[in-house]
Amino acid sequence: MRTVFSIFYWLVMVVYLVVYAVFITVVWALTVPFDRRRVILSYTTWGHAAMFFWLAPGWRIRVEGGENLDRKKACVMVSNHGAMFDIPTLHAALCLNVRWVAKHELLRMPFVGHALMIHGDIMIKRGEASGTKTFFEKGRKNLANGVSVTLFPEGTRSKTGRVGNFKDGGFLLAKEAGVGILPIVIDGTRDAFDGWRLRMPHTFRVRVLSEIPAGDVAETDVRTMRKRVREQIAKALETMCPDRCPRGETT
Image (cartoon, rainbow, N blue to C red; front, side, top):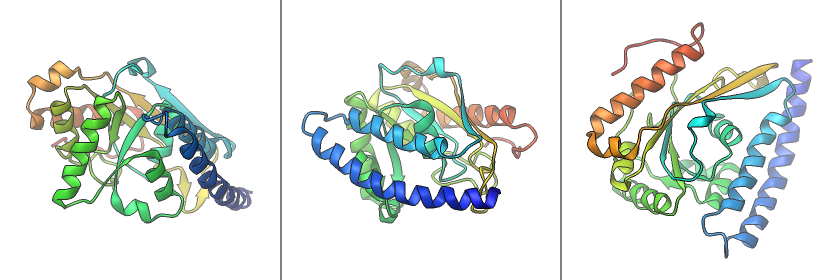
């Protein structure tokens, strides 16, 4: 039964993605002249992400720490990264107008690349000076316009589930832009599928930790802040999945 439904799910999703690609293009064309912050488009993207979960019976998202979200100000949001499904999970769970930082190669993916481009996300070429320049220029611009920037400071998906070492970029951006840092922890995306088949029922958990105020970010050096946030996320993840998540000393 699970195999049959999984086949049905993916067939429906392919059709849906084609329809959505057309729909989001129309929304963009109609709203971008007056909605420079792409708020309407962002909420359209939230609905799109939520469809991944609505179409799968037994799938649900549990959000913890929602009171730590301040929707009235921009910040740099950082999260652990375990699977490709992390982005739609955070979109569906938080329903915020944010810009994602993603690798430039994703633009070549059908539907995904188109959505990222239309949404105005920050696409960077890793290992190139131009990519770093783009990241900081677009990151500062979005934050100045009141739009939060969300990234995975590990730089790539964890192969083991353990939180990897963080890179400096997001923490330096927050420091330069004078904004706070909001740590977020995701659990459940790595084991949502058994190969290509869906696990049902299944719960995705998103825990929003306390924001580190802009003043603390400004007064703390980047290396110390990076280690502090990584430790917070790693410890929170261990408490969320004590029987499944690998452990290890933070570095």
